Amino acid sequence: QPVLTQSSSASASLGSSVKLTCTLSSGHSSYIIAWHQQQPGKAPRYLMKLEGSGSYNKGSGVPDRFSGSSSGADRYLTISNLQSEDEADYYCETWDSSWVFGGGTKLTVL
Amino acid sequence: QLQLQESGPGLVKPSETLSLTCTVSGGSISSSSYYWGWIRQPPGKGLEWIGSIYYSGSTYYNPSLKSRVTISVDTSKNQFSLKLSSVTAADTAVYYCARHEGGSDYWGQGTLVTVSS
Image (cartoon, rainbow over the protein chains, first blue to last red):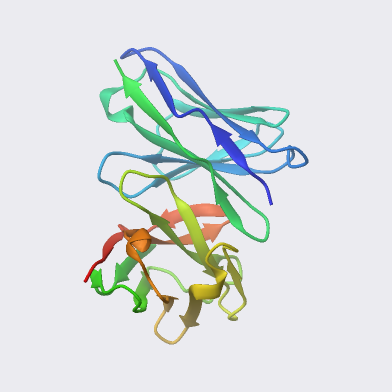
């Protein structure tokens, strides 16, 4: 079963860009992941599905400011032109015969 | 637009069984393309997958909860349900239902279940 590792926190300034990382465990570097955003007090929101090739498909209504990329076992979520509403927890998820979530990264917009 | 809505008691006593239902609207639970799952989030903590079901009834459960979890589906009502037995305070969480198209692409709004006497 894969394990997903995320940094617990990140911060960046309003209007800047930030790159969040989700790392797949050994032997699972080819896995597809999904990124989710969870604003305070709300349900998670699906952002995108991201393949090991770096190809990604975003969910409905996800702004162009959100993009994904990959390198080896690392999967990235980049948010450009940070807005105050981007302050949230971000989770990655993967699956095979079970579903697994990373521990989440709390993003603070300064 | 697909919508999922959790329902069930918000308070459960220790040692009893937690029961929740997810009603799917705007789409059929019988689609061959999707699994349907339950995910929970204890207060202030991260997301934990509980288990998932296919419309045919085949299930996958989190090994850490498997002995206490039962997930079932009622295609006639477009619903799927969660039962978690022998609950303790550690099972206090917001419980979400979700559709899996690979990842969880649609989520319910969540329902807080508190385990307390």
